[in-house]
Image 1 (tube, rainbow, N blue to C red):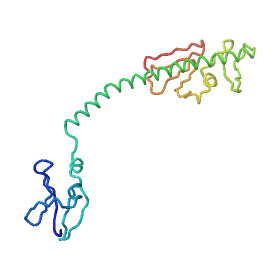
Image 2: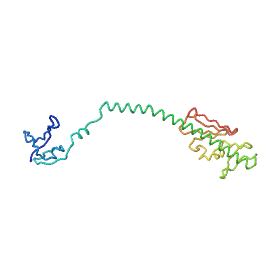
Image 3: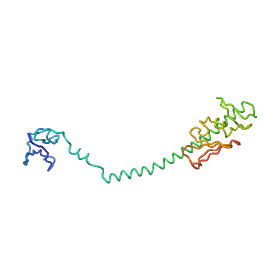
Image 4: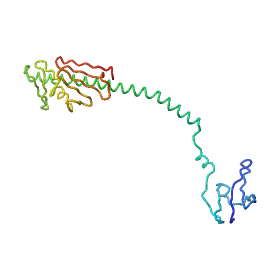
Length: 211
């Protein structure tokens, strides 16, 4: 077996596969008595420097599969599928984002109403209708309009009534306070997606046009 290379001759049907021995320029069929592993496992033997060595077994079809790439048709199919997914998913995502901003604006309006009701209840419980400030249960002072007990639009007014983080941020919303109004805007919303509180009347207006 020294100096020999073995390969399979795959001509003809699978029943006629022959394990051939290459010796120089002569090719001869190896008898069926050849080692069973040579026929069943289809190994490849290579000669290096005149010495017979057993090299790692390579699977013919596995190697071919690893060398093959995607066909143009397969790439086109993948691109079409991605396009369909994008066309259906992106509008849904946009709609959900809009709904989330509208919900945030409506929630802010609800928070303003709850804060007004809580301050007025505390104000009336004190019994002094001429007072311009009321202390909440946690000791926080909230400046209000006498008699109506509407929290003022300047600090410490509605910002303290709603327990906001600051005069510019309130529970994840952007807050703007001035002499007459307080506005709350959901994150990422347009300027017309806004909630406005008027201190003089206690009115709360929700505008979701830009949400």
